[in-house]
Length: 497
Image 1 (tube, rainbow, N blue to C red):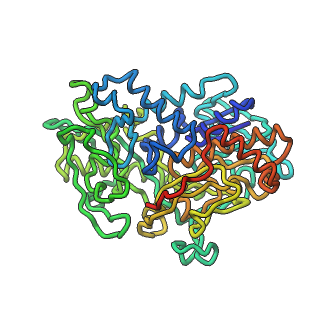
Image 2: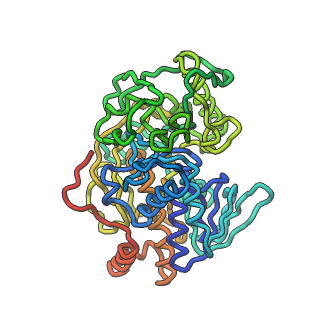
Image 3: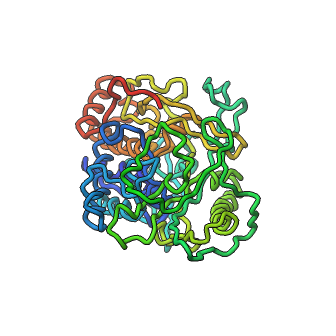
C-alpha cells in the first residue's frame, strides 16, 4: 500500500495496514510526520468527552504516549507528572495541548517498524492508471523521482493531491443549497470559496527584553487588531493578551462549551505552561498563535495558478501580526520560537494549517442535515462543532452546534477508482460538514479505517464498494474494526455542543 501524506490520517492508515500484514510506503511532503499536530503546529482539538470515550484505541494510545514522553523526558513538577490527564500547555481549548516536537518523537517511534518505509520530503507528481485502477504513483523527492507500484493507494495528503493526478472525481470549495439541501450551504456554488489557511507560530514572552522582528514586506498596521469576531455571533469581541499569568496551570481547564474563554489569547492554545515544569526549565510559557487575526482569506493555496503567491501571503500575514503585537500592541518581549515550530527560516510552522481539502465524490456524502443520523456502514465516530472560519469567498464565521456523528464507509470510497481510498480531510464531506470532520481524532479515524479496509479487501479478495454493498461482508469488516478498538457508535445521551 502506498499512503501519500504523512499527517495523522496517513500515519493511522499505515499503522493499521502494517499490523494486518501489509507492506506500506508512507510518503510525506515535509520532513516531519504528523501533519496538523506537528508540521502545522496545531495542538490537539477534540470533543469534551475525549478522555473517556469517543475515539479509536490507537488514537487514545497516541495521546497517552505523548503524555508518557513528557513524563520520561521533561522535568515536570511532581503535581503535573502525577496527573492522569497531564496537559503540558494547560490550554483553554485542549485537554492535551503539547509542543510539536514531543508529538513528532512519538509518531516517529510508532512508524519505525518493519513493514513501513517512510519517504520524507516526497510528494506525488504523477499517477499511472489503467481503467478504474491506479497502477503506480510517481513521487518527487529532494534528489530524484521514485515510482511506487502498489495494490492500494490512500490519499492522506493535506489537499487531496492524488485525486486530480489519478483523475478521481472530486470537488472543491462550497456547494450551493440547491445542490445539497443543507441549511448553512451557500446560495451559489463556488469551487474557490474555501476555509482559510493559517501560518501558525509559537512565541514566548520575556518581560523587559526586545525581540521585535524586522518589519515584513508589505506590512500594514491597519490590518491588525486584538478585536476579532465571535465565531458564533460574528459580533466583534475585544480579545486580551496576558503573557505568563500567575497561578497553578492545573486551575485552568478547557470548557469547550464556553466561548468566553477564547477572549484570552495567551491561554487559548498555550503549549507549554511554565508552572507544569521544574523552576527554571522555562523562562516563559510558550503559546501557539492560531488566532482569528492570522487566518488568510486572500485566496486558495491549491488548485489555482497563483496558489504559491497566496501561500507566501499567508506567511507574511502572520509575520506582520507578530510585528504588530511587538510594536503597536506593546509586547516587544514576544519572542518567536522557530525552534519549537520546526526551525524554518522565517520562524513559522513548517507547513500551513490546511482546514479544507479537495474532497472525493464518494459512494456517500456527509450532509449537514444528516449529522447525528445512524449510518449502517459506520466505520468510526467523531464530534466537533460545524466550524467554518471566514472564507476565501468572503463568508463570515459559521459556527453552530453539531450532534455526535458517525463516519460512513461510503465517504471513504471514490465513485469509480477501485483501489483508491480517502484517508484524511479528502473524504466525501461538503464544504459545511468538512467544518465538523476536519480535526485531529476524526482524521486519524478516517485513516485508520482506510488502512483496515485495504487489508480486509486483500484478505477477502474483494473491493471496498462490494464490502459496503454486502451486509455480511460489511458486518465482518465492522467486527474487525471493533476488535481493533474502533468505536462505531456513540453511547446514548451524548449531546450536541
